[in-house]
Image (cartoon, rainbow, N blue to C red; front, top):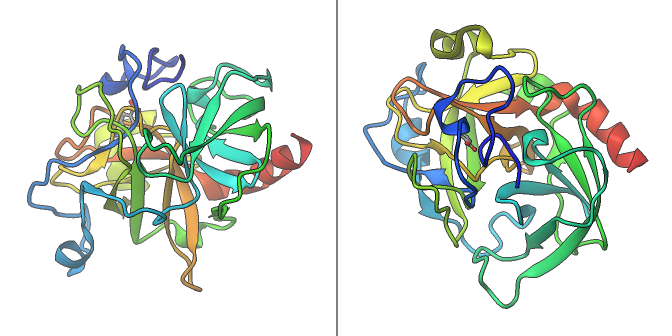
Length: 271
Ligand code: 4AZ
């Protein structure tokens, strides 16, 4: 068991929900309040926020669940991109079971594949650089999720998905994959709450000023994504941390994937 959201506080983080939680399965908090973005997003709210709904089967076919209670996304057919804080260390690792191909983790049609190796971001120490790759024992025949290689998609509305808690402190996770929509929050705005705990070059924030919709414990490692200009899903974030879940004025913090895109590509080729 590992992970900031699961069992341990990382060095220098003081986030409440990161503190001392027992293992739980990921999810999306969805107490739906009156939604307001931190900055004007005009009409987006009624039409795009579907906060806290169950995802449709095959809606996010790149989405995977990890046995220690984290999420992830298929970066290659045999490589999962997740959060460093969900992993113990780099090296051989046959102890992770990756579940794919289903919304319902209890489904008998779930594809389950073991890990063979883990690569944690070089220099990861609990602050920033929260990404890791898992090599799988065999490829999974599902679509991969491409990652953002420039910052052009670090804006707008994002989809979050996971099997984590549906409210802060629940510690249960969910059996069925849930999804929600959250708007980008600028670093400067995010720092109103987090101050210099936010590593702004390496992290990006998302959430509604009014709270109510967010990732939560057990969603860690899962992707935050949006459509690119061609209408294809593209990953912009990795669920990383936050102070609690879905609190008013407290965005979720995500690894800024575009900042690490080259490192991730290199590491995947070397896995
Ligand atoms: C966690 O503990 C966690 N609200 C994940 C995301 C957020 C907070 C906590 C963001 O895994």
